Amino acid sequence: MNRDIKVCEHCGEQLCTKRVPIFSALNDEELNKVTDLIIRRRYLKGERVIQEGSDLENLIIIHNGKVKAFKDTLEGREQILYIFAEGDFFGEKNLLKQQSATYNVEALEETNTCMINRRDFQRLLFQYPDISAKIIDELSSRLERLESMMQNMGTRNIDARVNAVLLEFSKKYGKGHPKGIIIELPLSREGIANYIGVARETVSRKMSHLQDDGIIEMVGNKRVIILDKEALEREVI
Image (cartoon, rainbow, N blue to C red; front, side, top):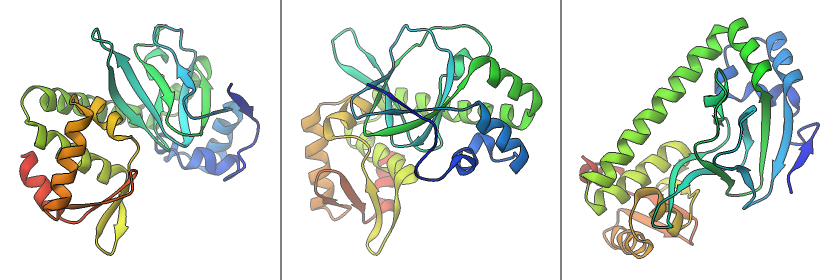
């Protein structure tokens, strides 16, 4: 079950809001006002954060951890739409108009969230237009992501899909490494397959080929080092 958290053990209340991109333009006094509105909640791995069709009452911000947003297809498969990590938010569709959730959200690991009630957040939007602008920017990026997903599933071959998702993860989760860029993968092989619309075995086989070709190096099941980013990019175009 989820657990309310009154104080974040990791960074303290002020930094909890300061690290969120949509609040980055606020000064310390304004951040304190936002912090007063926040309800903190923890979800364990596998717990459902949002159920598709349920009523949404809060904007939910990831303080730390990762969650996946997904829909169940008619064939009974899971189609992953987004991976939300530290500083990301969701539940925004209900901010200005009462709507039901259009996808499920589930914790991929232990995740701490910060929630702001819809009415409180509406007041923030009117008071601080910069927040509205940053939300619009983020939603535009999500539309681009969905367009890219449709392109992946409709026109790109399987090699290009796998390369594209590795590049996406490297941009969001990658860190510098003596050999290149190391990524802590947010999804299992099956999760990646559900993300790009292919079979799990296809993902495993493609990544093995990339390793044999010296383009990536797999470190266990959860980490990958990109050794030749340009080679990945050439096949995506």
